[in-house]
Length: 364
Image (cartoon, rainbow, N blue to C red; front, side, top):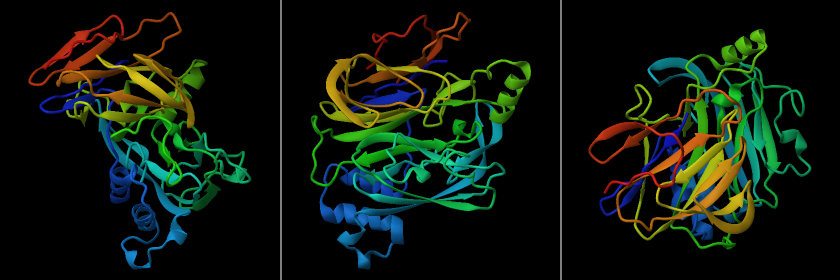
């Protein structure tokens, strides 16, 4: 299944995603987004203290800069996609779960409380666990799973890393819905080794099954076959307007001409390597798996499951709508659904495309 996005115009561009892009927003995250490139001590202190003590800002001080407390609640919620409603396991009632913002050098304490019927564990994918490997999260390897009604504290340090990683369930196939991004900001006063972006967006690619994911796995095991393919790919949990009952599930990323944007892309899909590109625009890759790389420019990137890639995109085209698109890499000789959606300023159209192309039309 393929996915697309769009840049919108006016005085602005807009990216719209079928593998959709969407922010997760709560007050601390909004504040971090606002100040992430203005690393004044007061701003970051206030943001971090919010996590610890809510609105009690009278005790604000630098001693809290290196400690961050996060609470994650595993809950079952009814979610509707593709004309189907089903209960899924979520974190803090959201699908996908919240983005976790930390800073290089932080000590992080994450309290996970499990209210779901499944056992649970959380893995911090790509995070280097120096001298705290017991906090890594794989069930039955570094810990017993968190049973229903129980809590578990993950206590670890963020050492020698900055960039984009992600967290996810590490038991059964619960990773299908239990996941989110991790953004590690550089130490205060440390600049990025690439041009400073004006703003950033998180793009978390995933999958959606209309039926219960654990049942999909059981059925495949019973038949001696791999589990069925997902019914849709998603961006930040949304499949986009091509799919039934999904007209409102398309993410629009508004950008301003001439400005540069950092896209933090996570492939949280269970099975698929995914191509990603933006019509009429090039991307400059600056980081892979939280490691800075020598910048290079490309029209399309391929992201493996579990991988993260940061790219810079400059809004340097005529104002309008431009597709963002992703599609899976297929390496087996089976028929594939090659339908791809298009959405325009005042009309909607659906079109079948035989291949992914960076020359997809733009409407002004």
